Image (cartoon, rainbow, N blue to C red):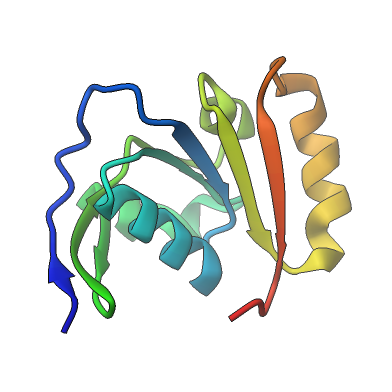
Length: 122
C-alpha cells in the first residue's frame, strides 16, 4: 500500500488546478493532485457522470498513495472550472481536444498553462 494521506487543501502558494474530464484518467489525475494538497476543480461535460464525486466532495485514492482527495469544485460548467486556476489538465481522448479548446477559449486567463494529456497515457 502507498502513503496514507487525507488532503487538507491548505491555503498556501501551491498551484491551483482544473482537471477537464471525468473519466478514469481525469479521476486519477484530480484525486492524486488533491491528495497531495493541491486545490483542484474538476469539470465534466455531463453533470450525471460527476454527481457522486460532487456529493462526496472528492475522490478516494488508493495505490502508490492512499487517501481522500478533497476537491475544491466539481462542475459541468467550464467557466466555473477555469476560474482562478493556474494549470488546466485536459485528460480526455485526443479526439475531444478540439471541443475542449472551443469551450475553454473565451474563459482562459493570461498566464494559465494548458496541458493536453491524450487518453490512454498509462
